[in-house]
Length: 450
Image 1 (cartoon, rainbow, N blue to C red):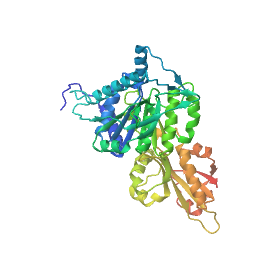
Image 2: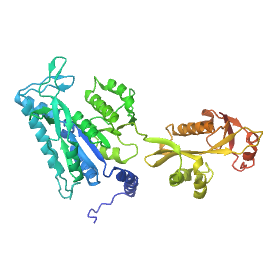
Image 3: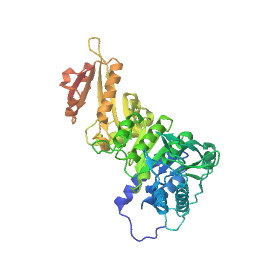
Image 4: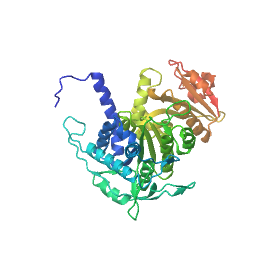
C-alpha cells in the first residue's frame, strides 16, 4: 500500500519498469548459483558498506548461494598501532609475529561481528525489513605456514591448505550465508594470518563457484589510456598485472587471483567498486555491468540464428523497417528464412543480425550470394559488431563456395565501401536477382569478390 503522498515521475517509473523487466533473465539465471564475494577491510570502513550488505541480502533473497570473504588489513594496522607493535611487510605480505597475532584475531573477530549484525538488521523502513538471514562462520579453512622466502621467516603468516567445501555446501543448501575471514587453522590448533584474496580464490575453486567477485576501490581494470575494460580474457591479464604491480599492488593481487581462478574452473571473475552504490546489482543484473569481468566463456557470440531468435530479430528489425531502411519481413517470412540469418547474441539479447541469401545461378554465371538485413542495436552501433557479423558471413560464404557477394542499400553505402564493396549496377546482378529488383526503392548495388 502506498503511504507516501509524493508520486514518482512517470519517466522514473518507466525507467524502473524497463530495468526490472530486463533484469528478469539474470534473476532466473543466477538462482541456485554459488557466488564468492570478497571485500577488503577498506570496504568495511566505507560509508557505502551498509548498502553493499543490503544488496548482498537481496541476492540471498533471490536464491543465490553466497560465501562472503572479508579482509582486515586497516583494522589490524589500527590494533597494532594502538598496542605499539610493528609488523613489517615483504612483497606486500605481512610478517605475522606471535606478539601481533592477538591484534589480528581481535580485528577479524570484530569485523565478523559487525557483518553478522548488519545482516541481522530487520528494521521497519529499511531495505532488509522482514529478511531472515542466518550467517555461518567457523573453522572451514585449514592453513599451513607460508614459510621462509628469500631468507625471511613469515612466522604465523600462512597460506590456505584446503577449504571444507562439503561443510560449506551443506550450509548453503540450508539457505545460510557462509562468512570467511583472513584466518585459518592448522591441524595442531595454531591460527594463521592469511591473505583474504587467496581465501576467496581457493574457496571459489574448491566449491566450483559460478562467480568470484572482488569488491575493490576502483570500478575495475583500466588500460594505459584510462579506459575501463568491460571484459578481459585470462590470457590478457599478465599485461595488466605488470601495469598495476608497483602503483596498485592490491589490484595486481586481485588480477593474479582472477587468473588463477579462471584457469581452475571459475568461469567468471568480476572486479567492481565497493565505493559505488549499486555496483554489485549493476554488475549482475545488467548486460554491460559496472566493472570488469574476466572470463574465458563466450560472453558474446556470433552464430547461425534459430527459431527461438525470431522474437529478438523482430525487436531489432521493426524500427529500421518503420524508417524504410530495411524491407519489411513478416514473422512467417523470418521463420521460414531463419537459417539464412546470423546473429550476435549476449545473455539472450540479439545485438546484431545479418542474412546471407544464395542467388540461383545459371551454368554461365559464377556462384553469388546477397548480404541483406544488416542491423545493429542502437545502443551498440559505435562498436564493431556490424563489421564482426559481416566478416562472419563472408567466411560462411567462402566455405559455401560463393565467389561474389552483392548488397543492396539505400542508406549505408559508405559503410559497405569501407568494408571492401565496390559500386555496381543492377545489370551486374545475376539474372535471378535482377528479376526481383525493386525499382521503387531504387537501392544502390555494391559487389565484392571473394
